[in-house]
Amino acid sequence: MSRVIVIGAGAAGTMAAIFSALSGAETFLLERTRDGGRKILISGGGRCNVLPMLVDESRFVTDSSPNTLRKIVRSWPLAQQRAFFEEDLGIPLVEETDALKLFPASHKARDVRDGLLAHAKAKGVQLRMNTHVIGVQQTATGWRVERDGAAPIDGDAVIIATGGLSVPLTGSDGFGLRLLETLGHAINRTYAALTPITSHDTAFTALSGVSLTVTLTAKSEERSATHTGGFLFTHHGYSGPSVLNVSHVVVRARNERTSPARVQVRWTPLGDAEWGAALKPHGARTVTGALRNEMPDRLAAVLLDMAKVEIHRPLSELRRDERLRLIDVLVRGDLPWSSDEGYKKAEVMGGGVALAEVDPRTMESRRYKGLYLCGEVLDAFGPIGGYNFLWAWATGRAAGIGAARP
Image 1 (tube, helix red, strand yellow):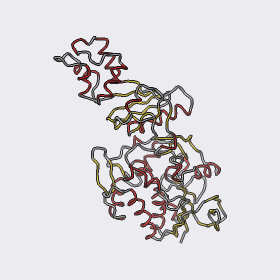
Image 2 (cartoon, rainbow, N blue to C red):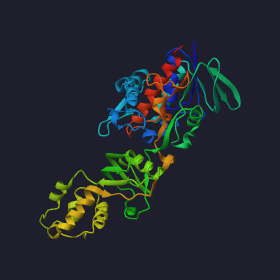
Image 3 (cartoon, one colour):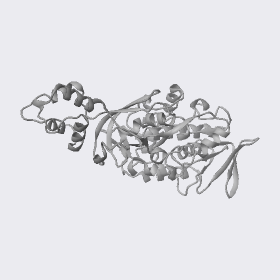
């Protein structure tokens, strides 16, 4: 029987341990915190968006080969992942069709975390919590994992599932990345992804708490991203799925010190022609009345001020230049931004170990036999909506099965 040591009891690591044990290996799961899976607990507002309802592979972001990414994602199809949670773990999932998300029927993230760990124990995984790994070394017969204050553990294979750099309060400190870099693996530049954007501009200061659905487009010299979804004005700037899903463009342009990314907003589903029709003279209606039909009053007032249009102007008196200027603000207005919330608030880390460094079938390192990688440490992330858990489950399963093979 082979012995597999999994480092990190998060989403990917726990799944890796389960499938390692199911594949017949003596499996140890080492976790630095006392309970593990802390990102699972805080995900989805404490409800845990386990999976997306549908998968669009093109929505993943990577600097590695998209073809390699697709192979990894397809290694465990969505339907099979859903069946694992519902049938193997006994965690029924419910659909939120408007957002295309799957949540546990209990709407409790703890049920997902606890269900995974309980299943791991039931399959024979030996959990070692409060275990601080300080080193991983290849030996003549396999691998040795050094622990702070405890005897080392020797195994035939090691799975690195230590996460990235996002939400450091959950225990993500970049240990795995540093280790893999020391071992010679190529690391694509890391950055905070799916993080709120901040702004020092006073134009929207009074709108904190206002939310609506918008389409955001972020463009830099190197990349662009567009997303339609929820948008929230905060005390510090902006958040919501639309913001998080394009934030990597802003973050990377700032980190790489290229020209700042430009963020534009279409504040409603209406385009130029539709707004042109909505702003035609209509009885005694004012321009504010026309905007109020499509957005919150407070936002309408701010956008009219930005377009330099008097809020009580009757539509019958709206000049052509004012109408065109207002439509431009409504359909492709610039969203002022200053910075971002970084890893502290980031849902995930972008970048990481290049996918070319692993065998996409098994997640085994192409540099070291018996060393496997999974989860956030790899160079890929997806949008809000369960994509990053899908990645964790798929890579964890592949690594667990691969590592257990004699």
